[in-house]
Image (cartoon, rainbow, N blue to C red; front, side, top):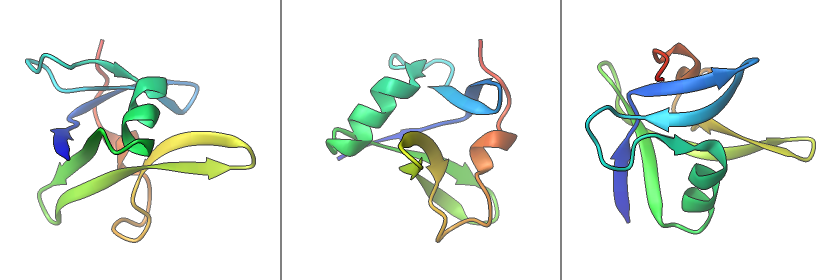
Length: 87
């Protein structure tokens, strides 16, 4: 599986709606496409944390809604929220 590092996110009302990594030909990628990529094993997205290394981004759900977040077994909270905004 091909890995893609996420260095920026686009947010709307607290929801991650896109991933970015400036200079990469795939950037930006929408939330909907990232969910398809992850669910079908096409790409694995991750955040590289200085104190932890690669942290996998997963498709998580609350109620019936799917959202993107970092692996709860690897982080105490969704570190995607801390990434700078991409445009």
